[in-house]
Image (cartoon, rainbow, N blue to C red; front, side, top):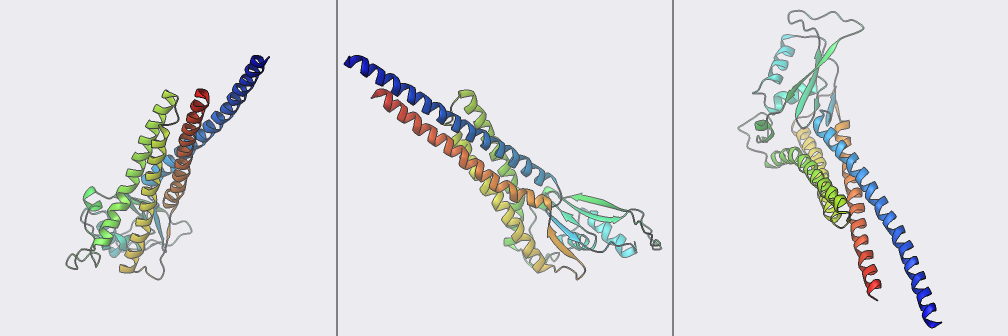
Length: 276
């Protein structure tokens, strides 16, 4: 009789533990899937923000009169020797947009160099873009933009370099984290996803650092080069994608770390119970 009762109690306990373990496994799997979805969305957003040219946008009246001055500004803008002041003056004047890799201006489609075009209701414009070279990305910024004799502005120089490098570091960390997560799925273990969570945390910090450096750099630039009265500026949707990507990375990191840590803890308790 005593043996039968003990056996029945043991069977009930094992069944209860199995049911609890199954519920816990489902919870871990759900957290893991949600974290993967957040990670994928943040990766797409980060890649899109890096590859597009709308981190900052300027709004100015369309320059319809294609005078010799306008032609000179356009030629200097596309020149390989354009300095910071030169291309920023063009960005201010011609509805410019700036990305991490390129700068763009909006100019009249049909340019008349010797006489201004007659104003029509539909004025065609076209966007012209120039890529920043690696030399320009790592070039020193000067205290007085465009004046090489004014001394190097170290703060703006390193802010520019960080805003360019950190997004790529963030993207690389997320890709490496995804590789570790894939290995965890193959091994059928959640514990390696702690590394994935840590990498996503570092990626989020890099993204946040990049966004902060960009904001600080723009504010310092506008203190050196004030916007004309008819020109306004605002952060574009590429910048917003990077801003959204950072909290998504932090949420994915928290879920990865929670699922891996809690699963490990439950596994340890289960082993202790079995031994007992």
